[in-house]
Length: 381
Image (cartoon, rainbow, N blue to C red; front, side, top):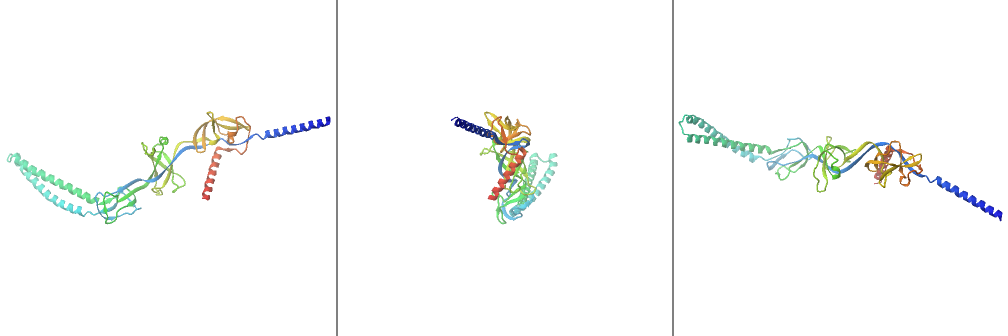
């Protein structure tokens, strides 16, 4: 009986010893696995993008001053034209006939004015010597003044007719490219419909509507990135030229951005995306947004020192996508938990599961991952 009790005791002791070893083994495996990143510095910016379309810097609709039948035109759609070049001409026959008639009347009036002047000069002497009465002299002077006024009136009529005849040759007010021609030889050109439309594409503009939260962060003269995928995969540089002081019916403010188009690659109607930078920093501590946690009014991250997680209060700055700037609380070289941070607590022992990366390496890895995903989607399509 005693031997049986002793055996049972030994067996229980062995089982307890085994359980103790199991618990110790479990305890050795309780250190949570986390991934860390070594803090470094880089560039970060907060920006907003708005879509618009390319439009010419200037667009002019040309209509004739004098309506009439089109006799000829000199430019087709797509042709370049210089300022002052003759676009088309209308019939000036009636104006030419009127000019000849007025010219004949002017010649007669000029002779009458010369006679009236001679008569006035002759009678001026007689009037000065008291030979003729003042009333008679006044009649002579009135005849002269009337002849001169008639001559001036006819001269104005001739000047107007000459101008109208010149206007029958319609010229381009600007240098540019013909975008529309609405006349044919023999058609009637009038002011009701533009005969030509000319656009200046040496510089182009993109109009976008920005929100009230953003408009006060933009100033005339600011340089902005303009992405036109039809022209270049890299953004072009534009300059803010005007900012509307009043909102549109949609509640946005119209911003005009001008771009140089000396190479002629930008065409009216192309889709463009304008990026406005609200704030930027070139030497900032940057972390993934998920690494920063907020709870009970505190913003903090976990750093790892000697395999121990330590809660560290931080202040944040610029946010851009999945990245955030840390303005206070961290310094370069610290190891920050970027994965597994939601499951650990201050002072807890942790195990680093992966090789530590710097913030700049992390940013490059994210960019490579995004490019890989984009290429994979493109191949799938």
